[in-house]
Length: 256
Image 1 (cartoon, rainbow, N blue to C red):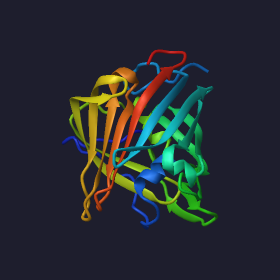
Image 2: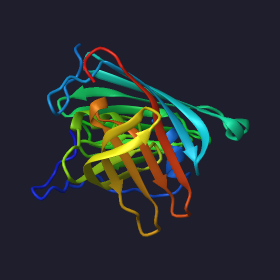
Image 3: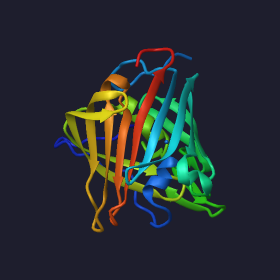
Image 4: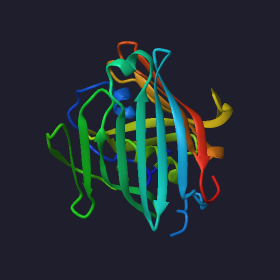
């Protein structure tokens, strides 16, 4: 199920936040029958193929290739990131995969696993019947209660195609990257535009306010491209800036 809104426009909470720590959020990010119907009633394509450039403080550091496939009420997402330039000298390519079911409310992940950019194996298994998430990195294992609508680091980006947040307000998103389970609140602003290698794109802007230590996250979704993200910016409290920008989005069978 997608994020639930209260009458005032705010979404209800989804999951508790687990212990923090580990690599920066951007490194965790690198690690992104018939066609399913979206929440708005449109038909989401059976397949999506996309490419993204990744930047660190303005320098191009990696290229991400991502595929989404839907078949017989199941989905599979594969994200492969290849470092470029100086980063390629000491970082191996990363590969993450998410798989699960497609429900009337969108994606319901069952397994998330792979190798993050920067090293380290991550894994998360969703037991929806028991309401439990098992996750961990490099062999470590933790468990936590999982609420309906919780996504993993890959599925959450395609879940937007089903929930299609287009109205001003706030939503709360629960997500695991295999290292932790967290819930974040985003302010939704429709009717904006953003510049990308694909041109200037009409978008819906999602912004997570800075925490006590500073920093924040912004996501631009493109309604004319299946409400998929075309740009993301993460700012760390220490001033480090990470960016992911779409350079190619191609759809398979079914309308975008």
